[in-house]
Image (tube, rainbow, N blue to C red; front, side, top):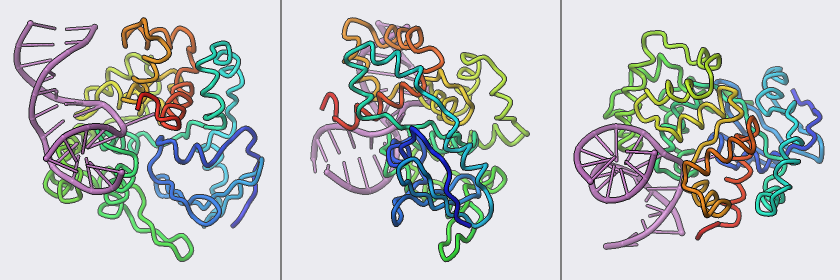
Length: 275
DNA sequence: GTCCAGGAGTAAG
DNA sequence: CTTACTCATGGA
C-alpha cells in the first residue's frame, strides 16, 4: 500500500543520513529502510511523507520517524548563542528516530572507531547472515537478527563478516542477554543509572551507551560524545574541559540535549569542523 | 605507506 | 578523573 502522511518540520534526507541509523539507503526518489523486520520505501514532498509498504505499518513508521516531535523549544534556546544558532541552518528538520534497543545495542557496538558507511555495510552483512529473509515486492531484504539467531554466532563467525576486534564484544554481549535480560526495562531507570547499566555490556562505553539511550530508550537528554562532538565542544567552549563542557550542555539544554547533539553532530560533519 | 572513522578496554599516573 | 596504548578493517 501507499499512503501520504503529514510531516511538518521534518527533513527525511538529513534524518536518514545523519548516522543515527544504519539501514537507510537512497532509493528512487527517497530511501529504502529496514527497522527490525519491517521495510519501507519513503520519499518526501514538502510537508508530506509518502510511504510505500507491504502491509499496513503506518503507525509504526509515524512513531519511528517521531513525527509527533516538536523541537521549537530547543530552537528558542540555541538561537541565543551565535555559534549554536549556526547549527540550525544545517540541521533543522532532523528527527531522532525511535529504534529498537537490541538493534541499537548491537549496531552501536559495531560503530566504535568506525565510519558511517562501513557501519552500514557491517549491519547489513550481519542481517544477511543472521536475519530472517523477507520480501518487499521484488526487493529481498533481511530483518535485523533476532537475539536467538545472533546468539549462535561465534567470535570467528563474526570476524569472518569483517567486524574485526568487535567480534568478542558481540559474543560477550549476547551472553549477557541470553538469560532473558530486559532492555526495555532500562527505560524506567533514571538517566545516569541507565547509562551505567548499559556500560556493563562488553563493547559499550560512555559514548555508545548514550547513543543507545538516545536512539532507542527515549532518553532525550542523552548526549553522545564522539570525535566530531568533541571538536565542536572545544569550538563552543574553548575555556572548558571536556567533562565541564558536557555538564554545561546538560545545564543549558536539559531534556533537549540529545536532539541538540544531533544538530551539532550534523553541523560539525557538514562543515568538516576542525579539519 | 599513513591517516582516519559516531571508541572501548586496560593499565598507569 | 586524565592520559597512553592497543585493538581490525577499509577507504581516502
